[in-house]
Image (cartoon, rainbow, N blue to C red; front, side):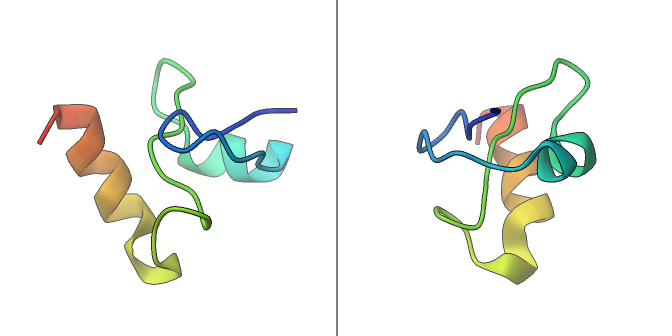
Amino acid sequence: MPKCDHCGAHVSERFARVFADEHGEIHACVSCSANAGIAEAAKERARGT
């Protein structure tokens, strides 16, 4: 089962398909980011900011 690379929480396969980056890394999930901000947090963490 995939997990968030930021907090280590398990996420669903579907969540991973939608929010993982091109390397398969999940930079934010519902456990460590607000639902509305997951995509934005993932982009920022992927850029290293």
